[in-house]
Image 1: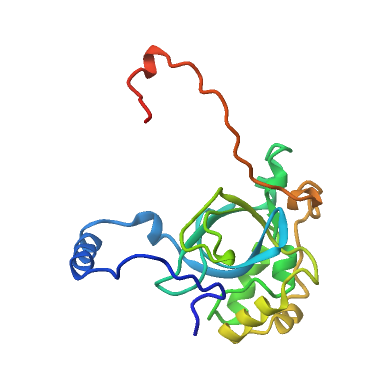
Image 2 (image 1 turned 90 degrees about the vertical axis):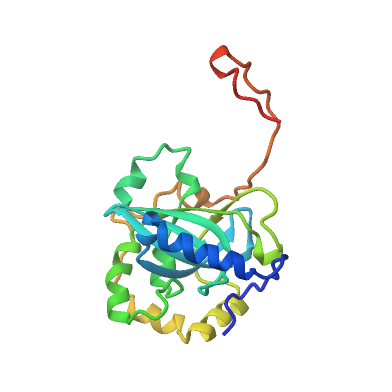
Length: 238
């Protein structure tokens, strides 16, 4: 089974035995509290906020900070050699509604992804999966990708990218959908039928979410640095 529908060859030498032994030692000695809180694996699709034709298979490994917020590391595949390509923050509707209006367009909804069957938990029995997805269906997410594997980048190049999620039929590229369905032996259409009873945000989808229906592009611009004060005189950037 291919680890990702976006195969990328990462440059570099194979991990040496000495490095592996050192990692084994540090892995035994050190604690990994934040990573150990990861409790669930969600697979879905993201597209670039300025180009819906560029779509990515996204594997979310998520932990709850509390009942209203999750934080997820996003990889391009489910296996040990997968590339870390981004992060996503997921909040409930009440938290989303507290955000400033100029922040809301950076967040996307999950209602269509869930009800459309294209967001799923690999390997989890449907009855267990649906119990949590009933909650996810009502949430909003903010996603940033750092590695553009869809264009074949061997390393994380360029600016971080704001990503969005599917909101209606006809958006998902069929070859990408087929790749994921075959890889995980799932049927998006069957899951759509199983989830028809689910509902989205209680107040409906906020009009400013999902980039307010527009495209968003990340740009880098040069600015003047503030004058250095005595308090910061020791900070030198070269």
